[in-house]
Every structure is written in structure tokens, then in C-alpha cells.
Image (cartoon, rainbow, N blue to C red; front, side, top):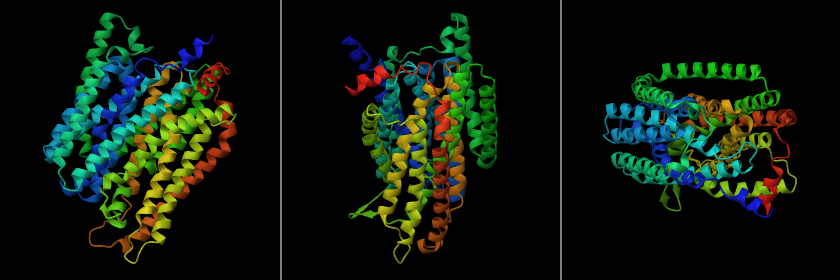
Length: 498
């Protein structure tokens, strides 16, 4: 009897490797995510509206392709193969962007987005497959993995800020290629422990497996020129992506309505409601590398204790909170639940939206107390990022873990991808919101502050309103969300509390 808790506490094979792979796999994305708007405006001389539109499409493709990645990995290439193939495309893409030309930028970005868009779902699926549906350790594993992701973000943002101060973009993008290549090496050394489990592809015979692999590889290659073409027409692409999102939403509703298992159908309805609420959170969150970054550069005092803060370093406020807070939050939740607190998914989602709203409402307050030139104190921006980051901890890793709990086995890849697709759609909305900010050229912070204050106040109030709506829906959502075996989590929780 005494050996059972120790067995259950032992992390599944491959979980530790995925933590370190996640760190290096994040570096290239961190560099592009934090630098794209500045690089396109300062090096490629894009107007701000065009730069923010490209940033919106960047997020839409990166997250939107996750839906396709969940399908492609589980049925054609395997999650393990697709992850490595995607990292190879990212390495080549960052190398092309490092050339510094507009042609290299568009082809490099297309390669990078195809790779990152398809392989992120794979790493999440590899992690979730290592736990049984009722295993409560999954939430802690995703919180740890999310912390690993943010270690990668911290390194990427820090290096990006260093090179940003001298605008040495070529060296920056070469650094990104090395980080992505390191993820490939780590995956190769842990190849056997990362094998797929319980996927449709594993049921295929030898000939069928090879045929599916060839089809998957062809799709991977053909996607690159398609993405490249769409990147050059961001307005048309935005409309197309929004239409695809509407079709996917309708398909998920249809799958839910027609699903025969009553318990699973209720869980799927809860997933849809919570995902709709998360769209508001991510639309505001995705303004960090565009609208919020431009606000920081033009309207915030970036001299802190005599040090000039690079724009990318501001986003490290988020990464530090995630890296430090992720493991602490996982341990704290175990303790609170052992004492009877019902900190379930609906509560965490509602709290995250309230925190995001407070984060945006802090900015108009800072503008109100700006100096005579309209420059806002850095402390207000710092407070905003703290609120947003704690909110992120309550929704993002919890959202990943939610898939394993609420999604039927046959829909796990699609629903994981759909969860990421919502973030892509939110990126487009974030681009729309960022497009409402004033052009800084030929004006002053004092003149643009009122526009920022109005926009941030409206967005913050909207997030708070949706958070309150989710609070009111908590009893209903709790009735929908049910485990197959309600007592399955008790032994694991008890063992974790010891």
C-alpha cells in the first residue's frame, strides 16, 4: 500500500524532457513576438498600421495553425515527428529573416509561422498523453511546462532587448536559429520517451502509416508558399481567418450537439462557454507586442534607476511572474484544495478576466497622473503587467490542462487546436485595437494620452464585465463539468498533499 503514492508521485517518462525542450523551442518565437513591430517599422520602414496588421496576422497564423497541427500530428506525421519538422522550418525561417531584406523577411516569416503554428499543439499533446484523464497531476505538469516556456521567453526577450538597443537585428535572428536548433537536438536525445500514445495514427498498418506520413510531409511543405502569399495581404488574410474561425466554431457546436455520450457532451458545452470567455482575455493580452509596446515606447518613462529599459525587457515582467508564480501556484492550489477550497476551472477563468481588466484600467489611471509632458510613470505599466501575468497563470496553463479533462479522446487534438485558434483570432482583434492608437510621428505624448486613456478604459471595463458574467455562470458550469469517476482524483490529491 505504501508504494502506491510514490508510484503516482513519480512523473511520467518524457515529462521532464518536455520541460527543457519547451525552453529552447520558445526562444525563436520570443524573439519574433517581441521584435516584429519594431523591426518592421525601424528596419523595413513599414508604417505603424501595416506593422501592427502584420503582427496581428503573425499571431493569427501562429495560433490558428495549431488547430491544423493537432489534426496533422495525431493522424499523419505523429506529434513527435511534426514537432521536429516544425522546428526545422523555424531554424531555416529565422536564418532567412537574418538576411535583412524584405524578401527574406516574408519567406522567413512564412517558414517560421508554418513551423511554430503546427508544432506547438504537438508538444502539448505529447505532455497530455502522459497522464490518464482523471490524473490531477496533469495541471501541475502544465504549470511547470508553462514555467519552462516562460524561461525561454525571458531569455529571448532579454537577448532581443540587448540587440534592440543597437538595432543589431541580424545577430538577434541568428541567435534565434541556435535556440530552435537546440530544441531539435534535445528531442533527438529523448526520442523514445517522446513517442505518441493512444492516437489514431498508431492504429494504422505499415503501408497506411507510410502513406499518411507522405501526405503529412507534403502538406507541411506546401503550406509554406501559401502562408507567404497570405502574409503580403494582411487585410484579406484577416477576413479569411475570421471566416475560418466562424466555421470551426460552428463545427464544434455541431460535434457537441450530435455527440452521443451525455457526460462528454456536457463537458464539451462547458469547454465552448469557457473558450468564448477566454477570447476576451487573449484579445487584450495580445496587445503587448503591438499597441502596449508602442504606448510604452512613446508615452512611458523608460528610465528606471538610471537604466534605459529596452521595449522587449518590459515583457519580462510577465515572464518572471510566470516562472516564479507557476510552480508556486501549483503547490498553493494543492494545499487549498486539500483544505476544501473549490478552485475549479470556471473560478480560475473568471478571476483571470477580472485581473486582465484591472491591468488595463491601471493604464488610464497612470495617464491621469502623467507629468506635464504627458509621460506616464513606469510603475503604472509595471502594475498593469503584473495583473495581466497573474491572470495569464489562471487561464493559459489551466486551459491546456482543461482539454485533457473535458475533451473526448477522439476530439482531443481538434479541441486543443481550437483552443489555440482562439488565441489566433484574439491576435487579429488585438491588431484591430492597436490600429486605433494614434501615429506618434509629428505629435507628443500629451496629445496622444487621451486616445490611449479612452481605449484602455473601454477594454478594461469590457474584460471586467465578462469576468462578472462568468462568475454568475459558475454554478451552471459546475453542473456541466463532470468526471467519469468522481472519486478518481481523491487518492492522487491526498498523495500530493503528503
